[in-house]
Length: 265
Image (cartoon, rainbow, N blue to C red):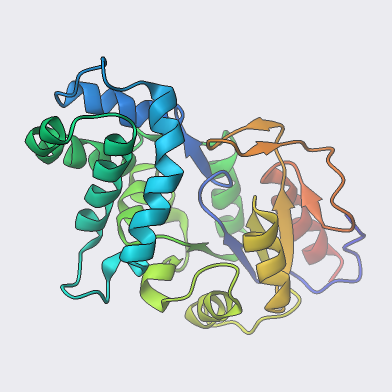
């Protein structure tokens, strides 16, 4: 990362959620499989690998038919109804008989949604809470930008993240734009009473959505790269060649940058 000596002090740090602040405790497809079997589906028809293969096509099909969580379709859906369709379609494409799904989806759907709204489904990275507390103690504004519906607020609260933010998250559900669109970044800055520019940092793990989206909106981007595979298929290598992108390997790097820029001001 280039020297921070000549940069303005940091005023606001925005964070992505998944694979930035937290990550699934076990792979999502394994959690779907677990709850499906607990909910009454036979393991003779399903496997974790079949669920894994089915999830992305099912998600794409439902999102195409009911975009933006079905918020403006006729009739409109609430997020819980939309996610139930995702769960149903995923398990159907994974091999579950339609009749068995019809009989058991009323148990499986709520159980899965409850799981992913809590620390049963997700875990924080080791430095997440420490980072947010340090920024708060330094008087730095913090918030979140996420392509998500309001259910994510329950997840963030369960993980003890939400109370440490100085501003409520900006969600694609609310602003009706999703990362990498500049509109969601501009909306987040406005909600935090800031103008885009130097001193506003966005931290995320996705090159296009988080880094390129934020820099295109006039915000300083930081791409976090932790070694390993986190969410399904998201294999990251801290040493990968991504040109002049400003990379960090821990949220602690942000705390150190904020401190150094404050001291040099």
